[in-house]
Image (tube, rainbow, N blue to C red; front, side):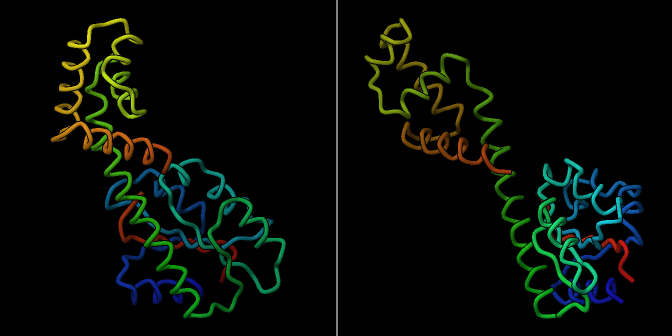
Length: 212
């Protein structure tokens, strides 16, 4: 009944749904190894303190690496289960019986977050491919430009000529696919921000652990 409620709510939101009887079945299916359009955006997971399978999923490092959002479902008044699941990384935990509106809101929030992370990851990979083309010195030149240093100051710190810095500066703009130095600096700043963030399309996977 719980899996059916989750599946119905996700379907109403236009999500693709995949169901597994237990967390162990989900892990065995290779769900956490999938990427791209096959990767889950949200995992609805039945949680119980006595169920090692559910917490094995929550502790799996791939869950965080792929930024899969987890919504927990637990038995009525099982506060300890809810607390344990939240501490293990669940976005939120519901008690049975499920409230349709709250469930849909949480599913939508998890899916939206997953899509935002996916877009951030796409942008990061694109920027990273450009930054990777920079030589060590070009990278240092870019860092100093970003900090506001003038060419003469950069040349002195790197013990090269101003003309060399100017040449490096031009190559940085080119390699970052920018039109101006300012745009190159802005792209590098975006790259740094995105590198701190941690993906995923509208796919929801449900797993029912100790939830009937």
